[in-house]
Amino acid sequence: MRDIVGRYDLDELLSSREDIAKTLKSNVDSVAKEWGVDVTKIELQDIILPMDMKRALAVQAETQREARAVQIKANAKLEASIKLAKAGKIMSGDPNAMHFRILSTINDVSKDQSNTIILALPLETLRAAGIQSVASLSSIKTKYEQGE
Image (cartoon, rainbow, N blue to C red; front, side):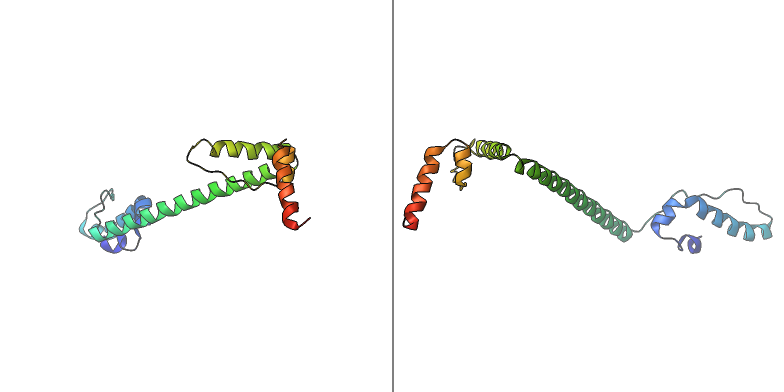
C-alpha cells in the first residue's frame, strides 16, 4: 500500500483517489486470491500527513495566495491605466473638459484646510478659465524677467 501511494504527489493523491484505489485493489486481489479471499472494495479514506509536510503545504498555499493577489492588483492597475488613457484622449480633444478636470481636482484637494496649493498652469489655461488678471500679471512678470 505504501509503495503504491508513495508513487503519487499529494495533489494527485487527493484528486485521483478512486484510480489509486483501483490500483490498490488489483494488487491486493492478486495476492489475496492465492489465499482464497475475494476483496470487493478498497477505499482511501484518510491520509495522515507528517507535521513538516503540513507546514510545507501551508507555505505553498500562502505563496500561491500572495501570487494571485499580486496578479489581481496588477490587472486592476492595468485596467485603470487603460481607462485613464481613454479619458486623456477624450479630454485632449475638448479643452473645456481638461479645464473642468483641473478645477475639479483643485476642489478635491482644497477640502483640507491644512493644504497649501501651488499651481503652475499655462497662461492659456488661465485665460480660458476667465482669470484674465492673473494671466496678465503672469505675462507682465515674464516680460519683465526677460528684460522687455
